[in-house]
Image (cartoon, helix red, strand yellow):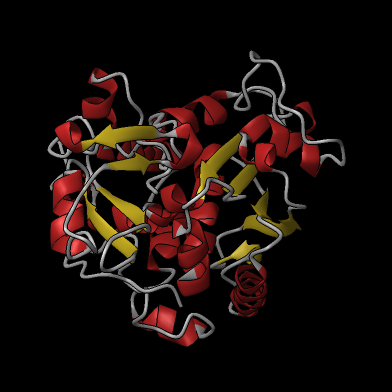
Length: 321
């Protein structure tokens, strides 16, 4: 298991290292699948959309597009069938947060995908997992089997009449397939080349049908938001960028590993408070967000690490590496 550094605040990683990820019983004991039960028994799809929009959750894959807005666009699309895709093709150098989430809490992703499907009117979905992540694939397969056995997935979920299926697709190592349209090309059995936009996936995605694509970390936030509410979620982070972010820390720090921290934390806080400082006591630069991210010098150590603050500097947070 990937080492988790001191993380007093847990939304995404609340079960990480605390439950056996191969036991659905332990997940259920931590209110697992309660969010799915809540939306199917008590909420209409529009209410789910409203709650996700009110939370201010932004895509955690790097683009930071408002999640609720993306869901709404897909829900409003007239064509059918609609599809859900979880992008788990984590290829950015230095990034291993999605792998950790899948290995440590696979049922949380299943739960997020089911809720997304209910909200937008989709009944079939795919999770596209990086081919090298064999443990993630094996654990997710086991979690799918367990969820079906408990009637949390498949036909007539929770006796509600709602049907939802999830299929795993294993990637073949292409970096570019982390881009959503290239990923869809790969799912269709073609070479994974990016498509021209527009059209965008919510209107024309997989096989030309409305498609909602979310990152692993994004989907891991869904069940907590549904159970505890949008106002609770907005307590963390900043006004413009609420919630937490999972960061993968590596390099010449004393303690490498995984942390979850509020949006707006600074690089200095991450290095000193979580990674216990630099090995030689000297900081030169940090690459944030993999090759698609930004390079921060020592003059940027106190810039808040959130999409808005970095955007003002002409930089991007990227994946959170």
